[in-house]
Image 1 (cartoon, rainbow, N blue to C red):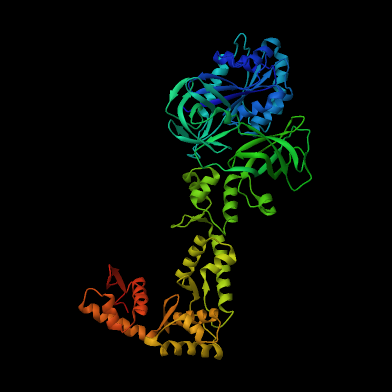
Image 2 (cartoon, rainbow, N blue to C red):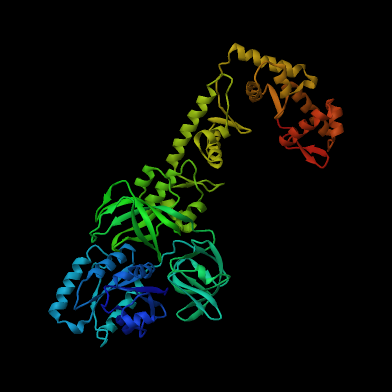
Length: 620
C-alpha cells in the first residue's frame, strides 16, 4: 500500500497530541517551547505503521498558518473535538480548511470521554453532525475515545487502517512536486528538507529545482520512517538530503520539482469561494494572507465586484507581494490580514492567463471544461500536447485522455491541439481574406503565407497546417510561400495586359531570352512592387520561368534548354558545367543559376562538380 498521511485538526487543548501518542506511542511535542506551554506550535510527526504517517497540527488560532502547512499534504483528516468543550472556534476553522483543501476523507474523534456522561456526549455529537453537513466529514464515523485510559483507541486505530486502504492514488502526472514543511541540517550530511510528495517520484542522484528561487540542487539521500530509500513517490512522507546548496536559502513554503517545469509568477487567475462560516466580507483589492502548499504569502485579491460576502463564489486575480512557484489546480486558503481569520478558499485556474475580462470571468472551475475553454481561447496560436501537459502539470497520457473525451484533435507533424469547430471558423476567415486580397487588383492573384500570419496574428506552424488543408481540398494552390485561388477568373485591364506584354517582350529580346528583374525594373516605368507582382502572375500562368529571386526566362527558351538536357542524358551519365555552357551557349553568370534551378526542381542532382539526371527530368 502507498503511504497515507493522516492529519489532526481541532481547537487548542482538545487532546490532539495526546491522541497521537495514544495511537502511536510518539509524543509529537518536540519543541521545548511546546513542552513548556503544553500546546503544539509547529508540525509534529508520528507513524502508526509503515504505511501510515500522522501529522499533528497546532490548534491555537495564532498558529493556524502551521496547521494549513500540515493540512495541505494529508489524505485523511482526524477532526478532534473534546467532549467536555464541544465545538469551538478553531473546530469550525479547521473543518473549513480541511474541506477547502479537498482532503480525501475524514474521521471525527470525540476525546476526553472520561469527563462527560452519555447524555452530554450525545448532544455534542448532534451538534457535530449539523456543522459537518456538505463537508467531507458528512456521514463519516464519529468515534469516542479516552486517550489516557486508551479506551476506544483500538477501534479508532482499526478505523484509520481500514479507511487508509480505501484511499485511491490516481497518477495524474509523472512530474515530481513536494512542498517543504521542515528544514534542518544533519551533522555529516548537510541540509535536509521534509514534506509529502504531492506527485511524481524522485530518486537519489536526481537533480531538483527549489522554487521560487530557481535553485538547482541534487538529491544525496532519501529517508522515510527512519529508513533509507533510493526512491520516493506520490503520497510518501520523505526527507531529502540535498547537496550543493546553502541551508540559508531553504525554508518552509518552498516547492521542490524537476528543473524547469514549474512557472514562477506573482499573479494568477483563481476561483474563490467565501467561507460559509466567516463574518467577513472581502473587498476588491483587499490585502490578505494566502496559504498555498506550505507557504504563507501576502497578496491582494481583485475581482469585478465591490465586495464578496460569505458563501459567494467568483473568479479572481491574485497578485502576490513576492513570486511563488505554483501549478494549475493548486488549492489555497485565504485568511484576513489582521485579525487573522479564515475567510475563503480557492483553486488556481490558470497562471499564464489571457488578461481580458471575458477570459478571467468565464474560465471554468471544472477541470475538463477548463481544458476545453483554454484550448479554444488559444485557437489562434495552438499549443502542443507537451506544452499543455507542462502548463497543466499533468502527464501526457492524462492530458490525452481528457483530449479524447473532449473530441480534441492533434496535428500529426507538430502535435498542435485544436477543436474542429475552431479550425473550420479559421478556415472560413482565411479563405475570405485570400479571396478579398486576390480581388484588390485584377493582376494581384496571390497572397503570401506570411501575410496571413501577420494579419491574423497566427503562428507559422498553425497557418502552414491550415493552408495545407485548403490546398488539399483544391480551394487554393500553394507554391513558394504564395497562395493563389484555383480556377480564379482574372479580369485583366487593357493597361495591365500591355504591361504584361512589355515584360514578355523584354525577356524575349534579351540575350538568350534571360533577364534579371532589376533590368526589367530599370527598363520599365513601373514601380518594383508592381513588376514583381506581374512576374509572379506570368510565372503562375507558365508564360515565363522564374529561375530565382532576380532572374526570369522565357518559357519557350526554357523548354528548348530542357530538351537539350534530356538528349544529353540519353547518351551520358553526367553533365559538367562546361558541357552545359557549350550545350546552352550561356555565360557562366547565367548557367550556374539555371543549373541550381534544375537541382532544386529535381531535374538534375548535383554530385560533386557534376550533375546527374533527376527524377523529374523526363516527367512531362
